[in-house]
Image (cartoon, rainbow, N blue to C red; front, side, top):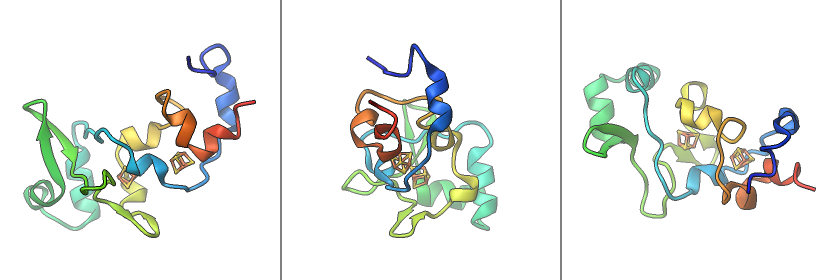
Length: 115
Ligand code: SF4
Ligand code: SF4
């Protein structure tokens, strides 16, 4: 059960602790319309070059970011997210707008909000 479902206002106190655990989880970062173009521009790349290098297709038609064999996102570096200023909406929205039961175990910021 989500401990924030009955009192979502508690999430306004959320502060990211930059542990980057969310960038190493199973699952995929799905790109919404226009996000591949935005990321490609940020990296000074042609969108076709960007999708070839950094994306794969899931569910037959949806673009996701590639992952490394250890599940880490292809954009995760020792210094954090290499595309932080333009990171996809799915990453921006986590964990305030969406989270999973597992997030409560690994997200250092969420853990501080759970009594
Ligand atoms: S794009 Fe950045 S924030 Fe999103 S999963 Fe990859 S490294 Fe993490
Ligand atoms: S797991 Fe939580 S605290 Fe860690 S980087 Fe992701 S959002 Fe921030």
